[in-house]
Each structure stands twice: as C-alpha cells, then as structure tokens.
Image (cartoon, rainbow, N blue to C red; front, side, top):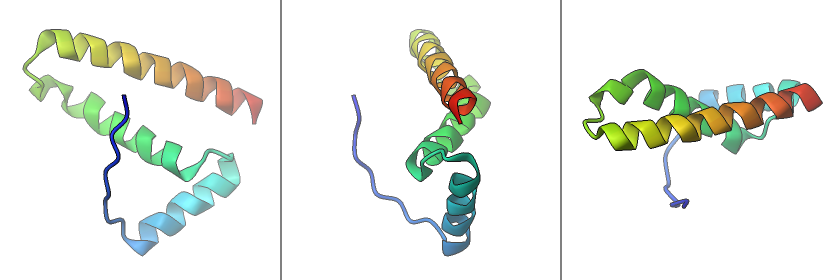
Length: 74
C-alpha cells in the first residue's frame, strides 16, 4: 500500500539527485525511496513492534533485490 506525501527538498539536493539519475538511470523517486529505506534501516531499533520490524526487513530485502536487478541491467 502506498500513501502520497508531499515534502520540500532543497534545490541543491534535487540537482544532486538528478545528476545521480543521469549517471545511473535510477529514477529520482526511486533514489528518494532508497534514502528513506536507509534511514529506516539505521533507526529501526527505535521501532518497538518486533513483528512490524520483521515485516519491514522483508520489504527492505525485496527492495534491495529489485534495485540490484535494475543496477545489473544498466
């Protein structure tokens, strides 16, 4: 399930993401999702629900596998 959220991103960060996109062909929204995934991985110890942490780990592992496939194709 996806939820739409709006965030403000500084221009210099957008430019950096666009340059990464040009070099890697990974879409900017996907790069943003990867960044969110890294924050969640880093701070997941603060998520008190063990079952939720387990499910989150499965989702993150699936995302990493997909990203690896995309990287291998590029």
